[in-house]
Image (tube, rainbow, N blue to C red; front, side):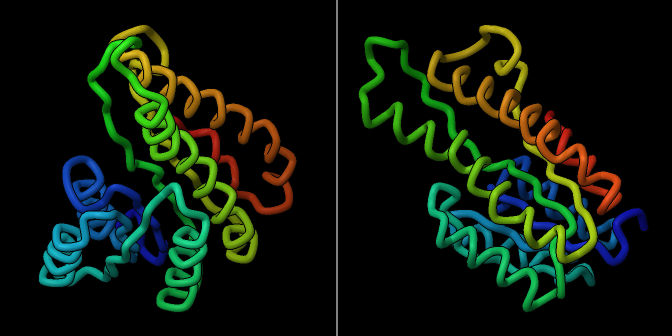
Length: 188
């Protein structure tokens, strides 16, 4: 099992791609902290993983809330001893053109899709240092490269890609100290 002994926090883990990632990580031996705002669905994913013999815990995680992020990191460290992997998967799509998009719409999609990646990255880096390294995987989209989709969504996915590159550059020197922080460069 490729992830034996690893501990992963996966956001947006209650359904869709995030739930699939949580199941796959558990199948590969990782202990998984599933974060989402869809509590009932998240608890179902936790139960499925446990029924198959995996280790998982669900917690309510609003990715735009720094206190929720600290709780996620604390939960991972208290329950499983460390944090090795963060998958910043949580995101929403806003299917509106520019003139239809309100200020509130813009702030909401930016909070979830971009600020959530920033807060998650910021929260796990100290935990990964304590663990001796780690990998951060930020999920973006083809919309982060080319103009495919609604404008606000495209803006958030472009932000995720450039934030990921900037983070990788900033922490590149720590590769020698901690060995594994090179995973910060991953963006899908």
